[in-house]
Image (cartoon, rainbow, N blue to C red; front, top):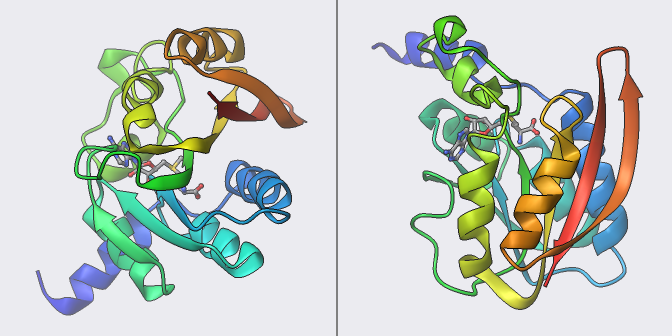
Length: 193
Ligand SMILES: C[S@@+](CC[C@H](N)C(=O)[O-])C[C@H]1O[C@@H](n2cnc3c(N)ncnc32)[C@H](O)[C@@H]1O
């Protein structure tokens, strides 16, 4: 691909900040401002918008990660340290004071799945929890003992089911913010051990 084609890829294949991004950033900044984390990770950083806001508004060092290389490039253009990674796989044990994730959450039938980066950004598989579930199973490893997880979930994904999964992994959950839209309610969960 030429440089120009690469740029087009960045513009069309990266999830751009939307209501869910804003809600996660607002809730996390408000909660973290009083006691900013030394080091935070935003999984699935996309454009880098949430990571940039948390860094700018709390003073924390925030690393972004994404499985989509175009997203890593766009986040870096924004000044975010970005690493290409599948969920928490490459990160060291107990290394982050806070981990944020606006996960892909839309329930999607197998025959509706498209083979592109926007599908990776949006699809949570048949029940909407295909990415959230492995995230919850593995995030505890990279979290510092007193660390917190900030997870955006939708009523379409099943907030109670996500809370139950988190509890199975040893977390307790509180809802920091809710916002309702015509077809869904978005909730930011804070998970601590
Ligand atoms: C709903 S978008 C959120 C983007 C951005 N954080 C925001 O709030 O605007 C979900 C992001 O998660 C990324 N993602 C999906 N599966 C992932 C995985 N297994 N590991 C890392 N990132 C993943 C997607 O590429 C996408 O950028």
